[in-house]
Length: 100
Image 1 (tube, rainbow, N blue to C red):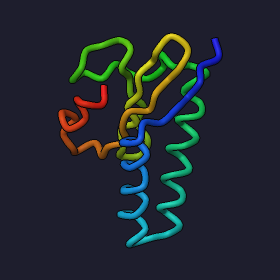
Image 2: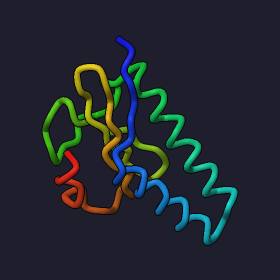
Image 3: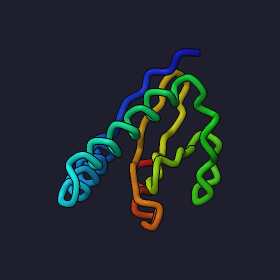
Image 4: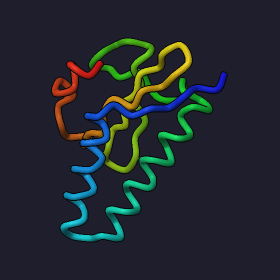
């Protein structure tokens, strides 16, 4: 099945904030991290179940992929995948409960 991948506004804000934060030290590294996150998000549609179930939610439709030290959290719906959040692995995931 070919899924349509979309980003929630909050996930896009997360990505922009990550890029801005990293860019303070290295424009090159910020571009590299953002590019890798986008690449992983595009590839999720091929094998959506490859991501692990997010332990904090224990819902088989809410999964995550790790990209460097970031968690790319997404929800699998019938024909779409919605990127819910991109958060640093040290942040609490409870901050995204309203997005799910």
